[in-house]
Image 1 (cartoon, rainbow, N blue to C red):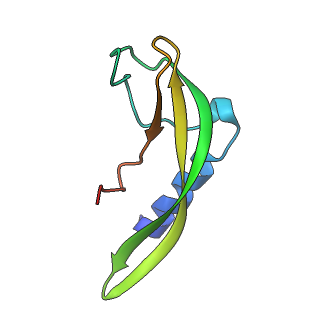
Image 2: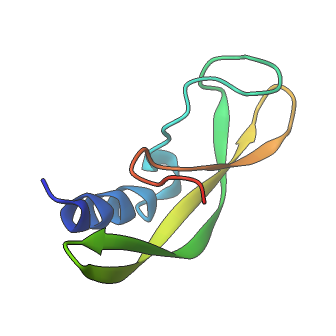
Image 3: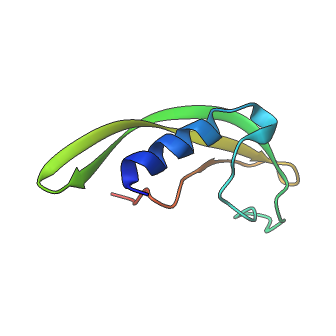
Length: 84
């Protein structure tokens, strides 16, 4: 599966009904509790990536989650996104 297809699959999984939204993180970074997250909101970001000698731009959606134990919120990033 190429990156464009992975982005489209990710967007569909993140933008679905809030209880069925995909979460890539397994445990809270603060309290270390496993999978105790509630959907919080969505953020839209522009993702730039290279295909050959061409730069592609795709709109991607990132899920925001709230930990049910400590109450902290975080943005969940898919594995294909790298930090700049």
